[in-house]
Length: 374
Image 1 (cartoon, rainbow, N blue to C red):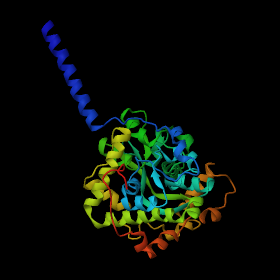
Image 2 (image 1 turned 180 degrees about the horizontal axis):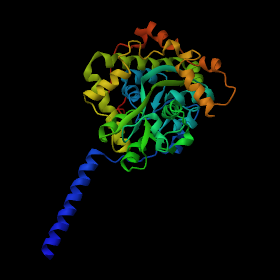
Image 3 (image 1 turned 90 degrees about the horizontal axis):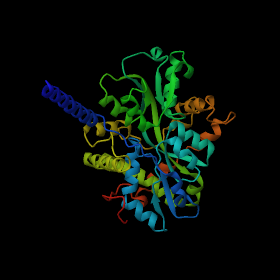
Image 4 (image 1 turned 135 degrees about the vertical axis):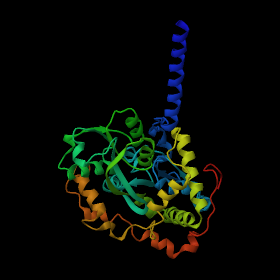
């Protein structure tokens, strides 16, 4: 009997180990690494010939274009003529980036933090980097009205916050009718895995990763979202050649990705490598699914990466985000939309396209490693 007891104990132990390994493989643990923002001080100091591109590497698909900027040998050569070089301070979220927004030359931000940055700092919006959707997803199928009382993960003052508030509003509910749980985007999957939330409002690539990893997860609501390339307006006016070289590189990356399917897969591998180096894991792959998602949110739009013509319009889609931010107190009352709307630089990319040969927007030379010399 003693030997049988030992046998069954070992069997249970081995089975537990196998199940744990299998579960860990299906749901890889995200390394909760927080960048050390205080170490960015030197590169962010004024009067240095460094162009800081503030990014969130765990964003998709806009980080496709920031990876292209960092691998673009033509851009590096154009900048080096006057002694400039790129730096890439990394942030976990747009909310984390905003305190540095006045010191960054380039910012990659979604709708909501972009509007906050434009209101608070002297920055303008120059290019569209993605156009997709966020979603509120739950561990089971339910309607918007059934989320009352649930623990819902979200990131405050972001587009997923907007998604959550609009979903509540559609069901005649408010934030007081749920248990809001403030989470960073890369904490959402672990919160679902640990059953510390019942639902999350999230974005790509975390949205697709959660839907793939958790059987039974269902989408409650979606809302359209975009991400943009913002630029410090003083930098743009004082260093027009360098500013235009950056914008030309965005146009070049879009043309390069349209030219060949393998180009897309190469950049997807860059994204994956960056995320693994930073966080220990990556939701993004270089397979057909991620290619489809990239195309559908970017280059399938024939005018991409041009800013939509109606972006300055009152009652338009960005104005709606502006109104939301005013309502929740993230933008001071009395802020005028017409004044802020002037910071959308609709003419910047068309000017570069008219001088395409000078800016080499149809010639491609991407290095394999960000660290290589120009």
